[in-house]
Structures are given as structure tokens and as C-alpha cells.
Amino acid sequence: MVPATMNMYWVYDLPNWLFAVLTVAVAVAIGLIGFYATRQWVRRVHGEEISHNDIVGFFLGTIGLYYGITLGLVAVGTWQAYSDVDTKVDQEASALAALYRGVSNFPEPKRSELQADLREYTRRLIDVVWPLQRRGIAPQNAAGVVNTIQTHLASFEPTSEGQKTLHAEAYREFSRIVELRRTRLKSVTAGLPASLWVVLLVGAVVNIAVTWFFHMRSQSMHFWMTVMFSGVLGLLIFLLAAMDNPFRGQISVGPEAFEMVYEQLMKPGK
Image (cartoon, rainbow, N blue to C red):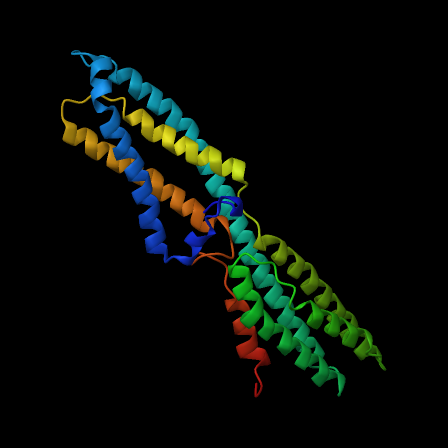
């Protein structure tokens, strides 16, 4: 939900429903603690005429407007970043499939050698790399296999114009895989900066705090308004946090694209 410096990454190990419940519960708890702590003081400030509710409402509307715009822009940016990572992963899987199909036209023994390298690389992505990425670790385990693929591609000497074309296409796809891999690894530790999270969280508390300044004769109505307002803010914070780190939690980019490539194209016997 928040940067590693705030030691909150453990929330991504929770089921989504529990993560959401905890976030909403914390927001509601803040709202109700302040509600009960300030109720008597607010009554004295308002006096008998309850004359300041219109001012409180205007103040809440103004703060809510600015906070809503900020939260909305951040949410759109977070979703865009998540979608971009998902798209890049799909493109990397497509490039991997194209490279595998390309080397399948190489003569033996280079064909089997490169196919074995690509199968090993794909299994490492699925079995080793992705679990590390889910823990926020940018893995380098597959770097050795990448170097091996490059070495084997470079050692191939085409003997015909057709093989030269195949070799050039394979090298282009390999270069694209390397480029997309670097982008993916960079995205492992991506997320909103700590300063922005502080602004969002403090802004949420301030919005909740303004509701405490309403003076209502019906304590029940004020209670439920505070609960609902705090709960909605908590739910929005949860949604933002769940998408903040594209490889963490249940709302995350998975290795399904690579699994599909392996099962449909690379698995022995295909």
C-alpha cells in the first residue's frame, strides 16, 4: 500500500477482501474516534443556534473537491502505469514466441540448442522470476540464460540468403525481448513515492476530520454519515494501493502470457 520505508508491504500478502476490510476499518475507526472525542467540544463551539453547519459544509465541499481531483488524477495515473506494465509483459511473451518460432526454422543442431535455451528461459520466468517479483525483488536469475541465448545466436553462421534473413529476424526479436525485460525489471519496484502517499493519507484524514465539525441534534445521523464518508475514503485508498505495485498482491500482472506461450508452443511434444 505504501513504500517499503514505511514497512507496509505485508498487506500485499493478504487476500484482497481482507486488505479492503482492514483499510476501510482503519478509516472508519479514525472517523469514529474523532467523532466521539470532539462531539461535546463542537456543541459548545456551535452554541444553541447550530449556526456554523453551512460554513462547515462549504469548507468540506472545497477540500473534498481538491482532494477528489488529486485522488482521481493519481488513480488514473496508477491504472495507466498498471496497464502499461501488463501490455509490456504481453509484448515480451509475444516476442518470445516469435523468437521460438524463428529458431525452429534453423538447421540442426542449432535449432534444438536454441529451443532448449528458450524453454529454460521461459520456465525460469514462470517458476523463479515471477515469485521474486511478487515479493518486490528485481531478479537477475535469468540473466545467465539470456547471455547463453545471445552467445548461441551469435555463433550461428548462415549458409544461405534464407538463413541470413531468419538469423536477422531472430536477432531483432531477441533484442526486443532484452529491451522489454529491462522495462519489466524496472517496473518491479515501481510505485507512488512516499511523499505522495503522505499527501493522500493526510488529505483523507483531514476530509474525515472536517465532518466532526457538523453539529446535529441527531447523534445517530451524524454517526452514520461519518461511518459512510470514512468508509468510502478507505475504499478508494484500498483501490489505489492495490494497483500501486503492478507485480504485488492479487491485483497484479501475472505470468499467464508466458505460461500460454510455453504450453501452446514450447512444451515438449508440441
